[in-house]
Image 1 (tube, helix red, strand yellow):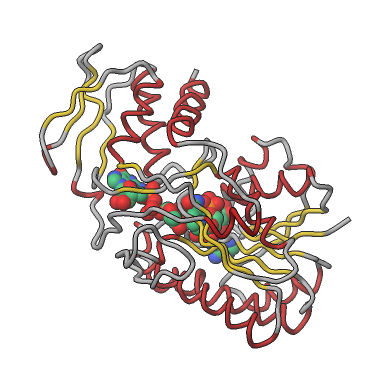
Image 2 (cartoon, rainbow, N blue to C red):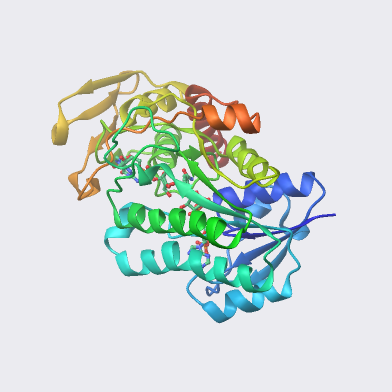
Length: 337
Ligand code: NAP
Ligand code: F7E
């Protein structure tokens, strides 16, 4: 039986990855940071809260990282923990760098000292492409991050490559494009939309207030992407891989797909800060733009080329964008019932 350690096990990806590894027969350990009331909601929703061993873990505390890696005899280490909300990274730039950049080197250097044989996965991101220098984006595309989050993740990405090349660690980096699910945090745009629309469909009156409706993202299903993470660590040699669907969609179109799942028929009016959407069936205002949600610098277009993962890992995304929007809208609607 293999043993895996997952940082960020209480997050969206951590919960799905823990479930996948348990199904594969792993002993699963995970890191949970100390807060007044530990949140294991996602692990409970997937029915695995009592099958994983949790350890107090914080990316910003070197001693804690050292002791955790000393205590758990892991074969595989998945670093999924991060300050992962791009919007918050302008308010928390130093903390974001400490967790998302320095946190990675703290782990790598401790692994190098205590467990050089353990395989390591770093959660890199399409946000590193930022102001894209090539369309679609692949492993060799030049990086141009557009937020403190993106900049911190670039450090995490390169230090992972550097420890692989310098010390021979089996350290891989997954450059994952946006992936969502019913377990997605409520501040991210897809979940904010599906939850807001579900509340409206259940009789609520508050329109969903959004920022840039024209941004385009390559959205997949988180359950598919954690399979790719695992496949990366099963290769003989560590490497970096893009995981993406190759399809890009505007925020507006995602909103429309989710609204259609809930039986709405949208009429769009206005532009930019004056843009709104109304449900023709009920006459309710369901969306209005609020400039408060604009970002100081935007990533306008992301679309990934996952051919390397397809060829070398045999990885394919299974859920398309419409099915994803339907899955999330239906889940939020049912939960509110
Ligand atoms: P998430 O739901 O926000 O989960 C983040 C996890 O990190 C949570 O468990 C959180 O703990 C933990 N965490 C935050 N700060 C920490 C700290 N200082 N010490 C220890 N743990 C800490 O994110 P996700 O969507 O699952 O994403 C997983 C990883 O993939 C992240 O590194 C993210 O940046 C990266 N990524 C995500 C996407 C995507 O589209 N989802 C795409 C590319 C890359 P709490 O539960 O206590 O908050
Ligand atoms: O924004 C626009 C916003 O916050 C997507 C993280 O998992 O994926 C995620 O980062 C787009 C942006 O995700 C609102 O301006 C409009 O263009 O859902 P998001 P993200 O920033 O792409 C990457 C790959 C990660 O690595 C990150 O960890 O939607 N948008 N209106 C809005 N976004 C939010 N959050 N809220 C709005 O009201």
